Image (cartoon, rainbow, N blue to C red; front, side, top):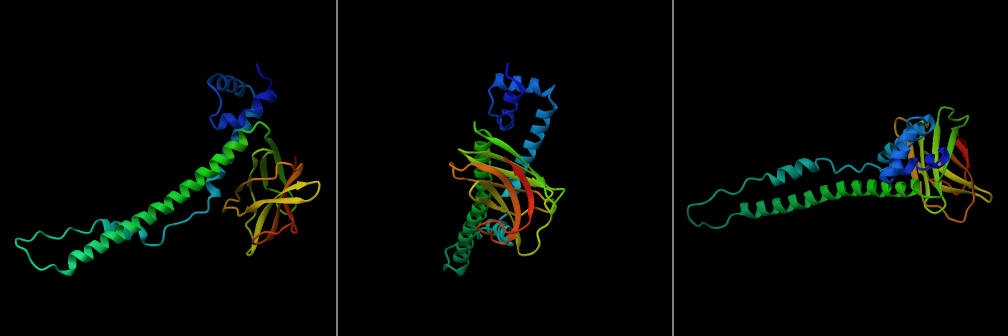
Length: 238
């Protein structure tokens, strides 16, 4: 039977449904008596929820759905009792049907892009959480955001997954930037724009040969900067 630390390391794999039947049963039996691991799973659920917020919504063009529905519901031309000279109506109907097919294709492509982005982020997060070398880093709110908190999952082989909550709304022209602090210099791990509730998340690849000392979030000019210049909002030691 595994000890508490070994079982706790399986929290990510359990949340993603990657454990075998016997491993899952052992982990679930441990959950009944371990409040720490139950809390770990609750926080992992927050990470999963944050994934949906990581994809920037790309709405179809205004009125596209109505145009699509109109195009596909164009009535067929009435049958005629005897041959007559072809009028412009059939050509117009053919054009409308063609435009309708293009609109349907565009609408489907937009939706497919959003689904593909979400699936790609979920796959990357799954790889990081299930990595054998993953480490958890808890970030605490600093003076600029005392009620904020964050969590990073760092894997030398897979990259870093980050999620935060309680971040204050950004001033115009500003963005939050995530940093992995090393002995030589901080490395940017992406830009963060929180939603209305202050939630933000990011997934990033990082050089495998670095030795991280801390993970931090600062506020910077829109577009990001090569090295941190603004106030620290979240900081956590690795």
